[in-house]
Image (cartoon, rainbow, N blue to C red; front, side):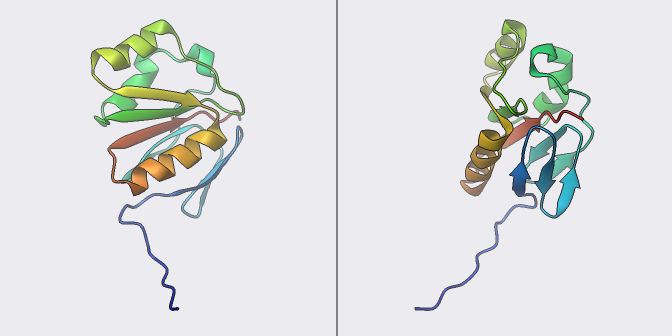
Length: 124
C-alpha cells in the first residue's frame, strides 16, 4: 500500500498550544493571538479570560467567522454574559475551552473547511 502525505488547503495549522506558548506552523508564539485558517494576528492584547471585554473581541468578530474557538489558557474560563451575548446577537457560535482543547478543535474545524476563528490567551 502506498501512503501519501496530504497537505492542508489552508495556510495556518496550530502545531502545539499550552497556557504559555503555542506553535503555528513553525513559528513559536509567546503572546496571545488570533488565528483563522488563512490569517495569523499576533500580539492580541488579552491574557485573562475573565477580563475579556466586547472591545477585546472585536478583532475576532471583524474576521466574520461562523464560529469562534476561545482558548483561555491552561484552564477553561468563561467570559462575561456581555461577551457571550455579543456573539449570539451576531449569530456567531462561541466555544470556550482550555488552549490544548481549543487547538485540537480549531485544526479539526479548519480541516473541515469551516469558517472558524480562534483566539488564544497566553500568559506571559
